[in-house]
Image 1 (cartoon, helix red, strand yellow):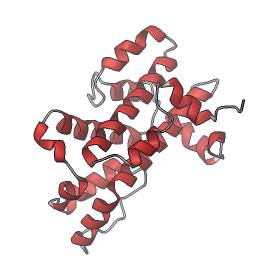
Image 2 (cartoon, helix red, strand yellow):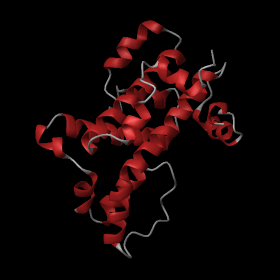
Image 3 (tube, rainbow, N blue to C red):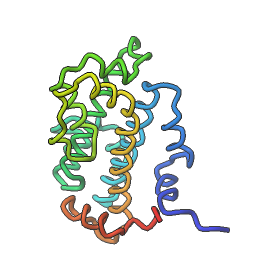
Length: 200
């Protein structure tokens, strides 16, 4: 029997179907995509916190904590323990806020990124990109052609969010696969050295 690849094994430990990433990219609609991606992030963060504190009895508590509360949510624990960098925490908070907005209002069941982005001004669009992208977006010129920028973001929103989600999954995997738990500042160095062998 062939060995299960590390990332797939990590997903199974989270209780995830092996086809989840494919299902995410092929979700019926953007509403479903946001809900599923958020659920994946919640599972990964809860697992990271439980293993970091080396106390399995805490899992149910972390599972019930909301993600984005800066004082008492999962992101607050992640920040206090220095487990993920600022841009990852920002993404988790923004994704959680978007998910809550969609999940708690049945009128948003037809949500789509194109309509969501269409009415954004340059400042709102820049904030959306900064929240959702794993890259440094400070130098992007949105004002020159705001309509073209909106269309570009609308057409690639899923890729943007899924890409950042995978960066976080990769960082969480590195934490859990390591004998030690690295602070956020050391994670990028490990990523750059190609320590994530499951991606080969």
